[in-house]
Amino acid sequence: MSETIKGTQRIYSLPVELTEWKFDGATEIQFNWEYEDGSDSLLELYEKGKKQQWDASTRLDWSLELNPDNPMELKDEAISIWGSDTWNKMDTKERAWLRRELQANSISQFMHGEQGALIATAKIVATVPDMNAKFYAATQVMDEARHVEAYKRLLHEKLGVAYPINKALQTLLEQTLTDRRWDMTYLGMQVLIEGLALAAFQSIRDKAGNTLAGAVNAYVMQDEARHVSFGRLALREYYPHLGDAERDEREEFAIEALHFMRDRFNQSEVWERLGLPAKTLDEIHYNSKQMNSFRGRLFSRVVPTMKDIGLWGPRIQKAFAEMGVMDYAKIDVAQQLANDGKVAEDFDARMFVEKSIAAE
Image 1: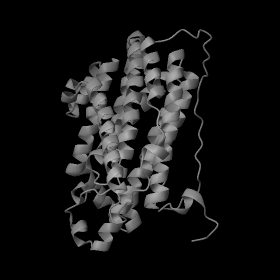
Image 2 (image 1 turned 120 degrees about the vertical axis):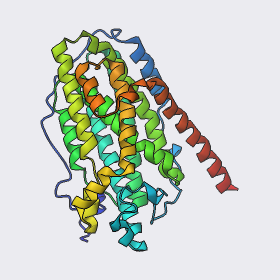
Image 3 (image 1 turned 120 degrees about the horizontal axis):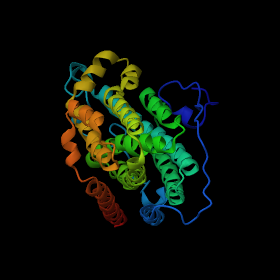
Image 4 (image 1 turned 180 degrees about the vertical axis):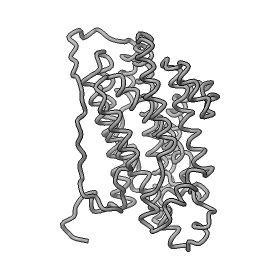
């Protein structure tokens, strides 16, 4: 490889012709000269956001090593094509390569998605009318920068492999960021994409045998739980004032995005990188119990939040019923998000114990 290739481009598994992406993110900037005008609940969340800032360099123990053959120490049963003919034909070296590439791809998409959240939240600061919402969104901008930093370090310092942004994620981000209405950025990012992220992070947080890999996701999820609460609070106050046609439009946007999230996310780039039959493996991946479990986590995050913010008309209830996910509406979303914070605190305790043992 040429020595002139530097930075992240040096570790991408697939060719990346451009290391930037531009499009017209239509927006309307809103100033507010009434500095005591805004939601008290959002001001309380802002106070919480300030107190829960953390440093990715010190809260995480970057001295922990990762197994090159299975960086996150996930069980092979977590791989969607585990037990398939393709998997059974692979030798030990090929399976180790596949584990590493799949995990690097997942973390890469987390990193790209967090940059999308960074840009979306900066847009919310500029466009939302509520001053207290601007305050909280500013803390989230810092959160998202920290998340990009943490995943970047995991890829550059530990895995040494990265993947370009997945086409499905790129489409979802563009759909969210090209609408000039501030509430659509909230809906697309704080409810739908954050719901997708929480479902993905949860899988690694709960299943990773490596403490560093699990902790990165646990700490990011603690922040993301607040971010979803931010979306809930802002939209719950705004959506009751919309007319039926405006609410229908937002429900339709959410339904289309959820169908897209359910059906379009796969690991095609990894199969192609190894020279595996991508079309066959995409079908196995989609129908696997691992992906069915993931879709369950996704809808368990999104469905109760949609109900909570008041996007709960006949159109969206019909769509959820057809997808077989209406039971998730019974979930207490506040309790679910509170649990994400508790799990992060448990990881703090585990990291402290492991450091103490290492010191002894």
